[in-house]
Structures are given as C-alpha cells and as structure tokens.
Length: 119
Image (cartoon, rainbow, N blue to C red):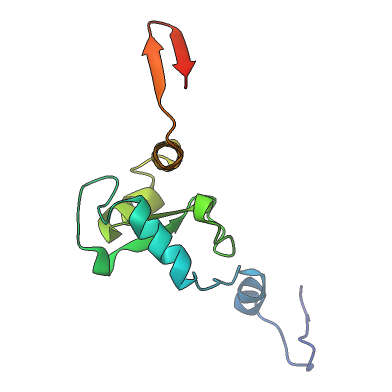
C-alpha cells in the first residue's frame, strides 16, 4: 500500500482505506421499526425495560446493510451494549428472535421427556 493514491491522485492513508472498506449503515424503514417494536411488545427482551424511546436496533448478523426483520432485534441500550461486549451470547439473541418468530406464527412445541411434538 506504500504510495497508494486515491482516484483524484491524493495519497491514501491507512485510515482512508479502512473507511472505504467499512460497511455503511442503511437506515431502517419506519415500517420495519414498528414491526420490531410490536414483536417485543415494547419491552426489552432481556431486562424488561419499557423505555422504547431510547431502544436500539441490533443486527444479529452484524451487517448494518441487512435490515430484514428476521435479522434485527429491538432492545434497550444497556442490553445492546452487553451483546456488543459479548456478555450476552449471540446464541441467546438468536434464541430470543426465534421465540418471537414462533409466537407470531402460533408455533407451540409440546415436550415430553426426550420426545417433542410440533402442532
């Protein structure tokens, strides 16, 4: 990269290259935000905080361009920070999202010992 130049001929620095490769965030549409708030019944899935005016949107796959409802979980800023730091595991986030999806679809597994019945 030594001597690398931008299209206009100006020198490129490491920070310039980093910013060019960084994934740009796409705004989440209002309708998607409304669906996500409804999904969690306006309550943080991890701590029961109800201050939705300050909630964040967590991209489960960490791709800010993927605004599919199945990839985003709405939650409070404290729990979002815990996910980012790894205090809440990705598997737990995925399980919460799956549970909400099943609730919306009316999925109701019945477990008896090691046997599971899906209706």
